[in-house]
Image (tube, rainbow, N blue to C red):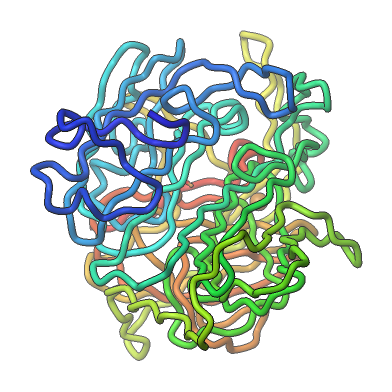
Length: 457
Ligand code: C2O
Ligand code: CU
Ligand code: CU
């Protein structure tokens, strides 16, 4: 089986078939979306010729891409082969709370050697991802991050469907681990990794036939980094934000993508010799992340058009009767004293004047808001800090109405990127009962206070 393929159970594997990178062959099989997944210690060649110890899904970096289909049940038998407890969270999926993968809140932690079966039916098509929700600085930072692609029930006809997983690893150019989190950075923008990769590779090149219709699914799985993306040298269209198709695609100029966020772009592969580049902009300067070049084949000579994505069936909030709930994100900056084990648990960030207290068995803090099942809400988010915060809600999808006091062309997202002193208004229907995490996706921010949960009942 090839590196990026995935161990599939049932009829297909007994027939000796592997999942190709892009195929719908499994749809008519008996158990088409039945997978086995492990979390384990492994090694990865992030720096050419050097092995770095990592935590990996199925021993692979990048993690296997899990392919599901909108409206079709998926079953993932997950085994924890780490020597610490973990869980898997399916970021962006509107699924029942029992499958949300948050320890104590939605399930007991999966202990070393244990197996937990995740089973759900993704209601929306698009680009999502998966990661543990325990010891996240370490577990995500060391590599337990992967893409979950939910194919649309009615498949748009792209020739190429590529997933690009962006991550800056906390390693040096000798492949040695550096500190994953430093308090002085946790209290600011987060501790940045220095080794930028796409699909675990430094500046990989992708080759496609000229004329092909290309869909890129860009996934920011980084603990800290906000990418300012641009594709230099091709006319690309933004077709989906955080997995959710937008009604009117628009040209990609530069797109800001906080941790946890995704972006789908589409273009027709130009028939020119010069490669073009995916860049991460820092101020005026573009840092190349990946490049794209034509290969020997040509798909089409005649003019082709990019397919449109079908919109997701996300419930429409009733704005006239929606209740507004205010959230203020603030800096606290107090460093609390060490606990008995001598480990410091600093608190830097607050949601509505409260830092996350942590939780354990039989010890669940109060929710930051209680919502009535079926009712529409408008969340008014204010960032009273100098740092950006990608604010993420589990189990629901926001309909963003305003950013920084200005109305925007509404779009769906599970993660709202608040800039410094930024503000946003977003509506949704609280239609999924449960206790749903609500946190900043800069992992060190959530670990040092910027986390809570919303109760829907
Ligand atoms: Cu990617 Cu609590 O989430
Ligand atoms: Cu999530
Ligand atoms: Cu934050």
